[in-house]
Image (tube, rainbow, N blue to C red; front, top):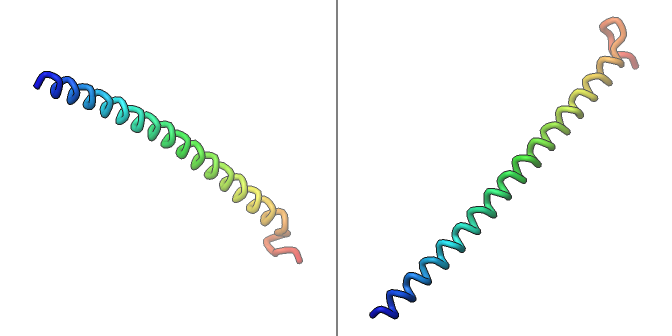
Length: 66
């Protein structure tokens, strides 16, 4: 009975350790994803601003230049 209890405690400790590693890895992936999303959002903002500047440059006296 003592051996069974020891094995159960050992198995539980291994499970807790594995779970902690998985959760820690997920946190790292979440941070990486958030960073990637922020970078993509910044890139899209820059593209939009560039397109807006190009559009405004093409306008002459309220009329679009051809």
